Structure formats: structure tokens, C-alpha cells
Amino acid sequence: MEHYNMNLTVKVWRQKNSKDKGGFVSYQVTDISSEMSFLEMIDVLNEKLIVEGGEPIAFDHDCREGICGQCSLYINGKPHGPWMANTTCQLHMRAFKDGDTIVVEPWRAGAFPVIKDLMVDRSAFDRIIQAGGYISVNTGNAVDGNSLPINKDHADASFAAAMCIGCGACVAACKNSSAMLFLSAKVSHLVLLPQGEPERKSRVLNMVAQMDKEGFGACTNTGACEATCPKEISISNIARLNKEYLFSSLTSDK
Amino acid sequence: MTWKQVFTSSVGKKLVMGFTGIFLILFLIIHAGLNACIWANDGGKMFNAGAHFMGANVVPRILEIGLFAGLILHIIQGLMLEFSNRSKRGIAYASDYGNRGSKWYSRSMGILGTLILLFLILHLSNFWFPNRSHQNFVLGEEIDLYATMKTTFSELWVVIVYVLGCLSLGYHLAHGFQSAFKTMGVHNKKYNQMLTSIGYGFSVIITLAFAMMPLSFYLGWLN
Image 1 (cartoon, each protein chain N blue to C red):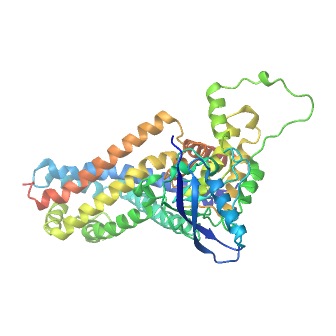
Image 2: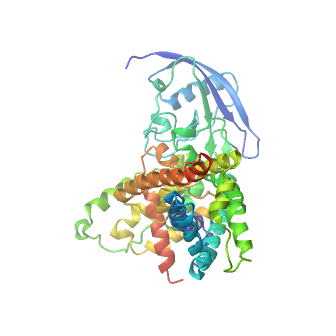
Image 3: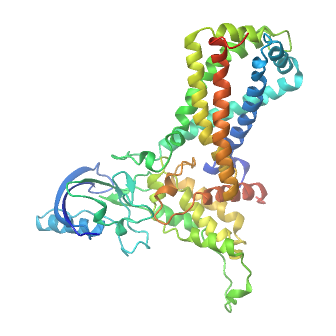
């Protein structure tokens, strides 16, 4: 694709801290290369702000390879921007054209309070994982990996669910701010494997209870989460979670 | 996990919506089937016989209590979920994801449901209430429901409201049918694809069948 430079208007949500009311501020950025990533464009803008003596825009990022789940940003009405199955760090400026206005917002959810500007507190996800997203492994010699027969389809589905990077785009896209796609991916990736069997019932019950406690909404199967997920986690995982929940709640001892 | 904890959790509440939804779908099939007797074109003889069976028999009347219980549960739970879900965002987005990620009717189940509820109040006051009060709410003699339909559907505004009510129901079902099965845990791809297709077909058939009833009377398609 041919390289080009562009001038853009970037409308960014600025918020000093979690108590601040916050609001949009428009910035002009010039000479942005179509080969830059979206975060590099913000880096350029931040350098300009620092030189001018202003406060740089705070945003989460880490690996910039699309695998860590740190970057977020709600760009022009879609989590992670306009491309499909893509994270913000892998979004490139060739997705935009000269003269465009880009609206950048933080994830919006009561369970993801804004820390500063475009950074939100996603520790609610960590607490959901702590509630049951693990397996028990006995100490001692490592078991031969091939000693456990695993159905290939289950292994594939488990791996597809394990692709979830916990970025929170599903919550950001959902009209109910529901974390069901995230939770269902975490439950599915363990429940489909024999290693996940011992905690099968307690896991789903405890993780759903924690999700509710964190203040996420309920799932209404609209499909917005699946459409925006950078790792293409299937919404069928939510149905699997529902099945696990129904089964576990009906058959649990307590 | 106590029963209370299960049914007050977000997934448990959805399960209640799904199960009552499927129950109401089954009712719609019976309702549409019985009402289709108006097209026997026998001056309402067959239709009134069907209505008599439903109204003067103790078994359907006991089931009617269950129907109202399911309906009320579906309405109250649905409204509570809608309000609770709406409160989870706090600050709204400046630019909306809109139809790029989901269907408008999937996002509008609360509004569509409320429209159906408003329609239902009119609908029950047109037919169910006059009939049951004539019976003193026991198994007494019923009114001529076919004749009631004829007079009710002679007014244009009633016909328009009924057709709009049926459309709301159709879109509600277009999402609700397949969503209910997902909520109950059907995750197999082949079943989900089949259920989605059946759901769309069912929504269209139910909408057309019910909308044709007031239209048939108003446009004089019946003798």
C-alpha cells in the first residue's frame, strides 16, 4: 500500500484523576505517517504536548504486539478502532485519511473506573480470575504430557478460548457493560480440558458471583462483544458458560 | 450456592428470562393456532368452539394461572434487568458502536417488551377481561368472542395498534427465540445455527399470523 502523510484532528478524553469530571479536548496533529501505529500517533502528539509544556495523554500500553491486553481506547465508536480482530497497538494510521477527526474515549463501564485520561482500572478482571480461573496442580514429578487423552476438538476450542488477552473490549462494546465474554473464555478454556475438571463446579459459580460483585451488567446476547473482540472469542463460549452455570448450580452440594 | 444466590445472580436472572420466554413462545403457538380458526370462514363457529374449550375447561384455566405467573415474571424480571444493565455504564460514549456490532432489535429488547406490554393491556381489556368478568372469573358462560373480534376490529386505530403490537412482538422474538436457547446453554454450533434460522422463521410466521387477524376482519376477508 502506498505511503502517505496526513493531518488529523484528534478529540481525546482528558481527565486529571478518578475524581475529576473530565471532558474532550481537540488536538491537531500534522504529518502523521500512514505507516505509524495508532499508539505511535499518540506518542507524537504527547511529545508535542511535552515540548509545549502541557500534560501528556495517559494511556495503557505494553507489548505493542497485540498479545498483552494492555492497550484499550474506544476509537470512533468501536473498541480498538475500526479494524476487525485487531488491538489498538496493531491499528495503523492507514485506517484513516487526511483531514479525519478521530474521537478517542476510555473504556466506559462502572466496573472500569477511569484512573486518568484514557487509562481505566481493569483490576476487576484480576479479581474474577482469582475467584476461580485456576487449576490445582499437585507438587511432585511432572506428569508426562501425553498421559492424558484429550479430544482434539476440545483442545482446539480450549485454545481458541485461551486466546483471550483480557483487554476488556467486550465490556466496552457491550450495551450492558457485561464481562460475560471474558468470563466465558476463562471458564471455557479450563472446563474443556481434563485438568480443569476438579474445580469445574466451584469455578463457574465463584467467578460469576465475583463478576456480579464487581458491578458488571448481565449478558443479553447482542453479539457486540464477539464483533469487537481482537482475539475473535466466540459468543458460543457464553452459551457454554450458561450451561456450566445451570449444571453446577443444580448439582452442587451446597 | 443457595437457590436464592443462583436466581439472583446475573446468569440466574437470565435463565429465568430464557425459560419464561420459551414458555411464552409455546403459548403463542397455541394462541395463534386456536385463533386461526377464524379463517374456517364459518361465521366463527369453529373459533368459538375453540374459545369455549379454553375458557370453560378447568385444565386450560389452571394453565392460564401458570401463564400469567410466567408472563408477570418475564415482565418484572425483564424490566429490572433492563434498568440494572442500563445503570452499569455511568458515562455514555460520545460516539456509538451502533449497528456495527449488533442488531438494533437485540439492543432494544426492553423497549420492544414495553411496547408489547402496552399492547397487551389493550388486548386483554378488549377480549380477555370482558369475557372473564362475564364468567365472574369462574367457569360460567362466555361472550361471543368472534362477534367481539368483529366489532373491535371494525375501528381503524385498533387495527393499526394491533399490527404495530404484532411487529414489536416479531422483533422481540427475532432476538428472544435464539437468545433464550443460548441462555439455557445451547452452545453447539449446528444447533445454534438451526435455532437462529427457526427463530427468524417463527418470528415472521407469528407476526404475519397475528397481524392478519385484525386485518381480515377490517378488510372484510371473512364472511
